[in-house]
Length: 613
Image (cartoon, rainbow, N blue to C red; front, side, top):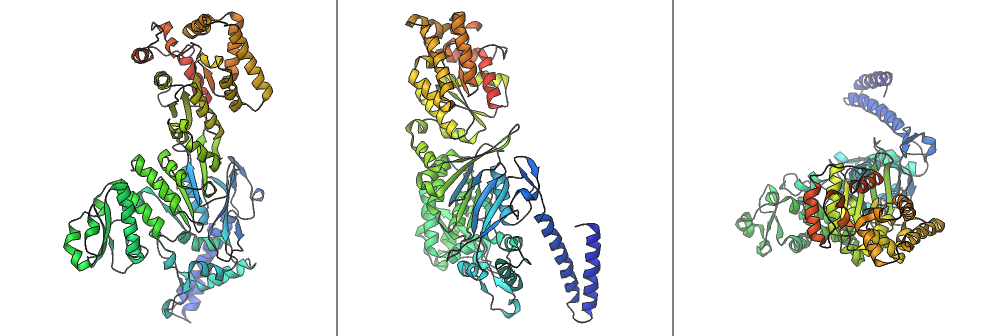
């Protein structure tokens, strides 16, 4: 609002209030309402005219739909509030499903994506442009909306102009919201084509009731003892009390299966509700008077560990919250791996067609549990990352393919899925290779954000590399020269790197020329022990040309030959005892001066450059 607008608003508002004061004792309020109405119109206009950023480039409003958060009307008999479509700033379009999981590296945009989704549902202007557009599903009429969510007018004459929204409120609601019947009628006219009201008016009133974002700090305090005075049924423990014993017993059963302890709502105090935990607490009588002294001997949940409190809060909001949109930010925090897997399974089991669940996670264990129980058509998996050169990167994983990857025995036998949560992956044939090259890399980049992982041989390394490529995860694979002798494996590797059959054929011909110039076992053994120095000049040219092209796709062949040859120039001789060689190499490399133009640092400098680390 401009200063001139503000002054005019004050003048109009207070003048109207002064005049009305002589007619009614509520006149000053009338003036104030006039001022607030003017402010609201200005704010709406500012929101409608804002610009968007697509792929980090500012573009005018005409390049996107007519409203920042476009809406679609539903023809369903039973209306369900929800997000119809999300368009990320990169241009990727996603149709939200029952389960929507945001994964990716730290500071990749997962939490920000949840917050900006909340802003969209609340009709707030956002700062960081994660989305180009969010499409909200709206009812055909306000009557169908009221019927779907059991809203009704309050029978109390003193508040007859407000709707009762208690049945929509959950513990995450900041404050109860009263609905003006005039606004309700206006929204109904808007759905029929009247432009006096709009989507922003609807979302600003109902958005906070329909979307809840459960952050870490909320989960840690949400189950603490709560007052019974006033009986505020937006409090989680009050809602648990109202939901009945069966819900409480089900919650206790889940907790016991995961944490080995039971749970009980202590309602024996006249002024508060308290959740108490203990291995035998279910044996206490249900009558509050009989249970008074026995319950007091069990600890309150607020005295327990962060993992247990966070887990119970997550379940409470899943089971007793009535919101159609619910978001969890890193719900696996404080949980052990097996507990995170259990929580992922629960998310999948509790999802319904009447709701949409959004989860931002940094846990492969939670993701594994979720995929184990969810049907492919129920879940979206979106990977978000940020690159200083390229900006935001968003990838939608094909859920059916991802489910197959989760069942792959090779990938499950390794730490493959951990790599999805890092900015880039450096992949090695075996654990000895990983240990050595990670130590080498730390000498040239101490603050690397790359995830180091290993396979169990060349075959599984190629499987992992191809899978990372299909999922859009930046990956660099370091191999010994032996890969050149295995034609079928090499061809499979090329298939994941390029769609060009001509380029693949050219690279394979280069491989064949190298192999043909090393006809017997002794020549290969010499190549493995001494690397490119052992090759004739022509063969060396083929090798250098091949490796240069492969490095463009993230495949790096050790020019030293194989791992045990990597430090021969520094006095550590080749050895067939790999474990002993690695032990001695790790002790030696820390005392060497890193030279990025020489092996073995040259290989890792090339990996570093490829991954943009």
